[in-house]
Length: 120
Image 1 (cartoon, rainbow, N blue to C red):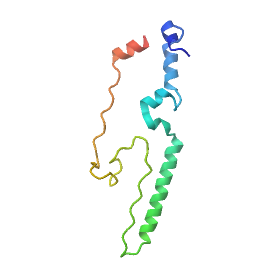
Image 2 (spheres, one colour):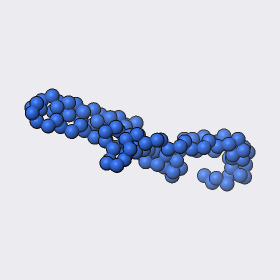
Image 3 (cartoon, one colour):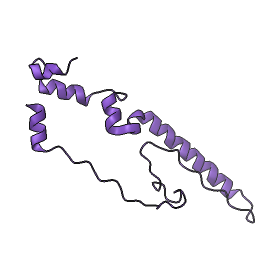
């Protein structure tokens, strides 16, 4: 597909919007917009959650069955997810990092003029 077809009138704005909206997860555009987060599927997130829950269950079992005079085992660290920043998991921030940093500013939405220029 040639993007110039949109300028030549052979490709409608609606069709172009549908093609862009339904790009595959590994497309260059999706990776540029969402970064590493685009590479993780629902299955990957569910698997990471299952690993986290199993690690927590093992930690609880070890904590309950540890001698009272012994040091308690360290709680498990969650599996790193795409988009995680230091401090996303309280108590697990690297030394010197704030535990609750402020979130990054949201990107500016396109203006009416931007949308008109793109779709007309």
